[in-house]
Image 1 (spheres, rainbow, N blue to C red):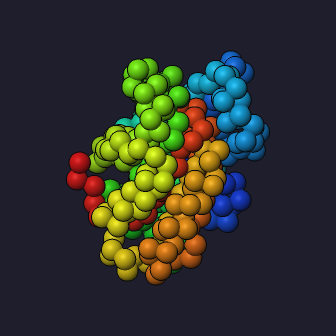
Image 2 (cartoon, helix red, strand yellow):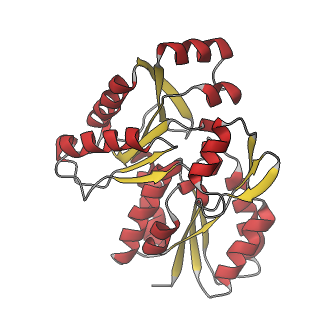
Image 3 (cartoon, rainbow, N blue to C red):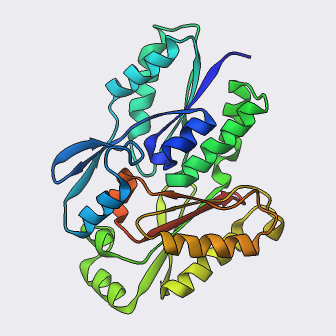
Length: 295
């Protein structure tokens, strides 16, 4: 079996320690905080608490994709080590970054004709994308070749389930995802939208739920409805959150009570600065392997 690298982008929203533990390489998006550019490097340059506090204090944020040139430099360094590459990109339904990755891979194919570079659309985001990478790392450890792993993820990626809720609509309004009047009324009434990711990798609102307590209960009910093997689910569960750890912990505790056969404890990560620049603080996202997305 050829030596190969599992690769992703920082938008997989795992910690740097988790990436190292899993043996996963990653390349960083960029974000701007009050017009100053930083790498989205899993909170190492700008800690997440400072980032979300700055947003709450009114700082302007925007994000930037990874350029084809950056991908080319990143991939070349791995190829020069004699390694093949299986790279998964952030969902094409949320970003066009995969096109830059494909362009770089195409340019490098002639330079490294004996190496394989596979670029896969994860159709996933945040720690759901991260849970895919963790699963691939386990399968690589079990001995799957790069071709076997590519085929497996293409066949199974739509089984990665994402459920999100937000307790603060301020930044959804600011980013144009929610109309100002609806956002004002929603915040006033304590409405928490519940969203998921569709089969094309887009983030889709599904329900409007009044009160944090009810949405925490409802997100776990949606897991019950869409998880693989129902209450016998024995896979991993990841959660990501933006400056609302206690809400995430409440979801994790309920998940662990509801699915006693799951693998280990729920792992909680921070929503990174690229995705967090659009959600702002107050978002909790739940990820697990489930039934295939159909809409």
